[in-house]
Image 1: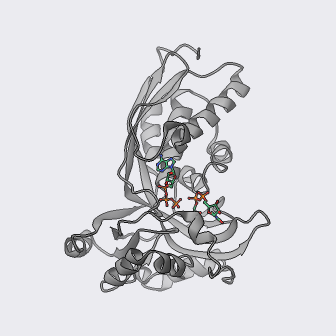
Image 2: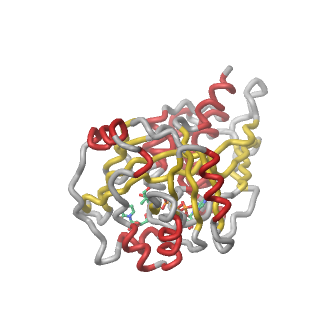
Length: 306
Ligand SMILES: C[C@](O)(CO)[C@H](O)COP(=O)(O)OP(=O)(O)OC[C@H]1O[C@@H](n2ccc(N)nc2=O)[C@H](O)[C@@H]1O
Ligand SMILES: Nc1ncnc2c1ncn2[C@@H]1O[C@H](COP(=O)(O)OP(=O)(O)OP(=O)(O)O)[C@@H](O)[C@H]1O
């Protein structure tokens, strides 16, 4: 049995955004002793993603009320993140928190390189921390989230970020003010298959944060900085990804995000992005999205604090 629901506290948070991320570039600079790869990347939030709904329960249970095809509830990163937060709550407060129902409107494709599962988990941590009044700082939530997904700390950080390590060392950078067209090539790319490929580039020379920031100041930011070191392997193993890169490259500096499969290209206006989106061949799903400079949960929670 969880703690009784405080009638003064708000008992629900509906329409919570879990936005996607794009990796504007992604360099593999080495490998850790445990096999995980050291990365350098700029993570950019965009205004397209999943939507989550939370309701407190009186019985202490954590219940996913919607079906996510291919993801059983017990392995869902949302549910696993909520269990981790419940454990931390119990350690701090000496009693379990109230329970919680979570419903998911899933829009982001799995194995898309858009960080969907990690973003869902980060939104769940922010929402439950608020509803349970658990009192964890963002930094403490990041520590809870990192073992579950390398991108979770970024989503909790909630700003355009220069990331190092496996994605946990984050520094805020000014991101571009632009629109993206994102093409879903219709395949799901397992991240592990890309990182274990023998011919993966693993020795890109490390850059500094100012190498990136300087190009943002001086150059046309839409032409793209660096490259995605995972792209050569992913396009070889998954031909639809190669086709999407080739097609979108006809309109600008197109590139894959994360370990794929999705491919994106930046445009300076919504109209230009819409014009290109309309021409995407019908065999692919495609959408446009705006670059965000702050995670929308941050403002939503501030409003709820008032
Ligand atoms: C590549 C990125 O999409 C960049 O945003 C992410 O770092 C991927 O993070 P993720 O989806 O949370 O990846 P995980 O599901 O933890 O990793 C799957 C597998 O990919 C490999 N992996 C992942 C991340 C990393 N930095 N090095 C790796 O070698 C590991 O074999 C791991 O077992
Ligand atoms: N809530 C969730 N949403 C999506 N996938 C989840 C979720 N929980 C667990 N998973 C598992 O995580 C896997 C990767 O999904 P995800 O959408 O995070 O991939 P991705 O977009 O390629 O992410 P990344 O950019 O981090 O590699 C899925 O195949 C699924 O098995």
